[in-house]
Length: 267
Image (cartoon, rainbow, N blue to C red; front, side, top):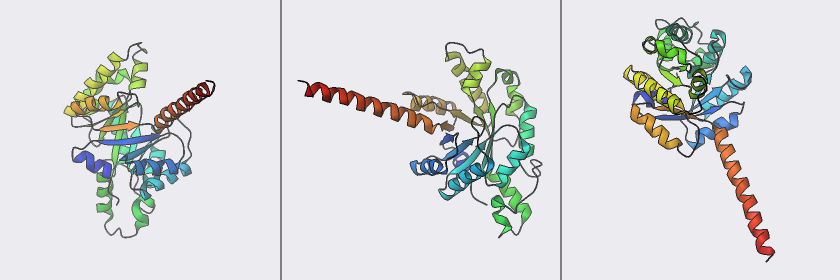
């Protein structure tokens, strides 16, 4: 059983940072590992990817020793497929009730924590090679799995205490853009971020790992620091932000340089 290094760092009260990847690219997974990210989240909620592509990305994560997490809609069959393929984390959006989290725990964990179909003859079970005690293997699988529920709708807030009390769901990820949308798309995000801070504070007090997506704006690190002070310790950024911002900056710099060079020549 592979150790989930991201979960181990969180258990040691350390912060972790990962990259959300929404298109099929094992090479990008490997690059994120080399850069130093703790985990990658393969985002199948927003962009199309087939199962084979996702499995190749999980393989890439394993080979470069970075934790593979799969974000996918509420589908127990697909969740099982990716767990059996070696995903060390499952991230499910649009969880609005305690029952949603209870179902998630049931689908992802073996007895006695859940009802995940037992299977250890594939990649996640090392093809049953060297597995002498299947009961111990299932306990280890439960122990190493990181289960993340996403709270991103205002209607969940009235039931937040019930949601936070559900066992065997490790983390709550706060989706600020869908929360903003469910709040009526206010022109000022201040109220949205205040709500997120309140949820995070309550989540930390309830013993949950609180997780956030961070847009790579100029104040990104400062915002992570604010969430860290509340007690949040899991952060996800998008590699597309690096590409977009780096590309825009480079192209603008080249264009400006060309103008200066041409102006100098014309003198």
